[in-house]
Image 1 (cartoon, rainbow, N blue to C red):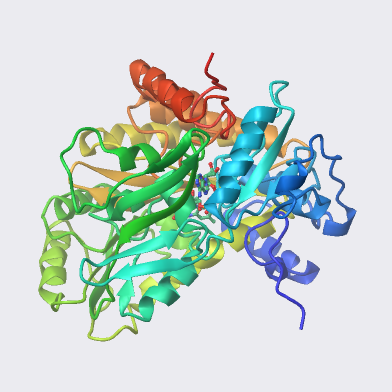
Image 2 (cartoon, rainbow, N blue to C red):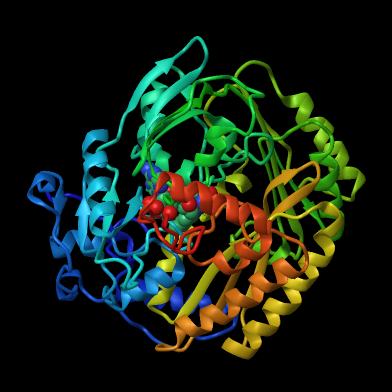
Length: 537
Ligand SMILES: Cc1cc2nc3c(=O)[nH]c(=O)nc-3n(C[C@H](O)[C@H](O)[C@H](O)COP(=O)(O)OP(=O)(O)OC[C@H]3O[C@@H](n4cnc5c(N)ncnc54)[C@H](O)[C@@H]3O)c2cc1C
């Protein structure tokens, strides 16, 4: 039996890229739903035809047991899964492959690897699942480094310990989402952190990027689930103690969360877990007016009801995802609990929605089992899981689909949204001759939403990367200028650096650089991510 292979350039499994007739069918669908014809029908460069440059550095013999310079392995660690990564991979451009890939099996391997890299000026890029969409796992090419090494954490792949009394688990950094859930399920627990990239991203990657999961309120980021962390840095081990909470000064785990591989390599963390939910209540509400739907979501977010799911889709998003085609905005709202029925919470919420003109297209669904859900929520979920595969397939048709996300206060949302719609639509028209922009709320807080935008446009083969860069810059400028963050959960990486630098307080940037110089004196850890290339004098 042949092993199922991950795509070397696109999202997920290689066998999910459609054959030629499938691509043609998608092209027809694009034309009928989006109104523009695909400009091309291309297939990705075959893996066997890709050429990677020879390695510039070779690790010493002492590291050979877990390091490789094989072209195939280096190629597979060249990119994350941003749209621009996929385009470069599709075209067979792997000129920036790492010189070496390490597959450490222990913290001691990491200690030795980081010592060699620091001594020999080799940049170190930690690699979890490689699903970064912000250039987080790309390799810097500056003359300061003799080469680069990608550190693949896939051998750190266990739920190592469960503390059922405190409801916490010690999880190794390279463990993929499904494995975490399968293991915890044996004891009736769940981490319930489901980013859209769940299948292929790792626990360590989530912590390093402060990933956002499926909870729309309260436990939105992985940060809220982390009790303590352990990280190997070039300067030594950084380990925090397990506490449910602590008021002892600035939080050391918070320094590690969001560090994006620039301070060290996270090897494991204790995370808060919970019993698997038993009671669920789900409903879909339609609004004729987007502004009133936004008001409803704001009131719900401020009501202390804390729905598990509270996704508002604008009319474009609702129709592109096959949820509703009559121009309505759609709110999908759900509650769940392992301990008590949740019907009453949904009823309160639906009363708020009704006050703002929300209509129920069908009865809510109440369940007392793991199974089931509202059929519309099901359609949305299926579209949500398949969307990344479609994004990859559309590259072959010369269609760009990418997303950007943010958060802002409720009082600013209308201005932010209007600026995004204006500036990005204008950029799409100028740069691509047209396109579509949709919006949904992925997470909501009492003081503001986290809007998530998708843009779709035709691109010219050969200039797609510069076209993408113009749209991305227009979106990022609009966010920054209207007081919205450059990212709510996709992280900073290399792509968001210019706007992150302007968003953070100047003194914070300097303090972070000082921390980096302490933990990483040679400045080899993921240079260019979060900070400019900094080394201690
Ligand atoms: C289709 C798709 C859907 C996505 N959906 C979501 C979503 O719903 N929510 C969300 O938050 N994000 C999402 N993302 C972005 C991405 O999945 C997250 O940033 C995720 O947390 C990255 O995990 P990873 O294991 O793939 O990390 P990688 O991509 O391998 O690495 C990400 C960053 O973390 C660093 N890193 C990785 N592991 C470690 C470690 N052990 N120690 C130190 N640094 C490390 C890397 O150097 C890099 O800077 C999505 C991406 C795609 C392609």
